[in-house]
Image (cartoon, rainbow, N blue to C red):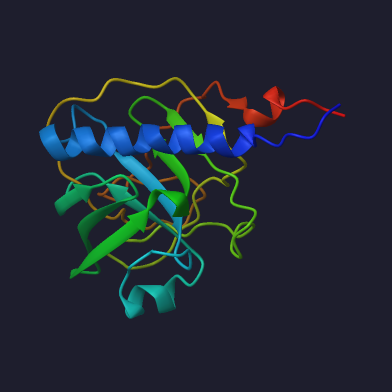
Length: 196
């Protein structure tokens, strides 16, 4: 068995991050369609992440935001996205490089991407879901190495916000109600790696 000098695992993760880039780019143009909304977990200490010192202090490793009802100035480029969200009624501007994203989930269609970020300090920590109303964190489902479910179409209209926190392990919508999550068919990238 030869050594993978091409690094197919890295290339596959970059390609999957391209899916997120395309989806956010479509939302910038047309808004969120139907019931689509996104849970995005990212490493707050990753290079290029720009958040306020208040948020960085509160979430020093991982944070999950929900783009759903109340967002503004959503922008995307080849390497990152920017969005305005409200946290405990305080407006904030976030810049998140795609390389800092650990997980992406659209509960409307049970589409989930998860990324292996072993090279970063906070890779093994649980993300915190930020509460828009209460500011209290809640833990979403754990995020594992890169996995992908069936992709979905995107055009439409919508808004976004940070999610309302809850005390359970399940994601919540912006009203604090449990977000519906159907069983996903996921494929681990490890299944495609050659084993020695």
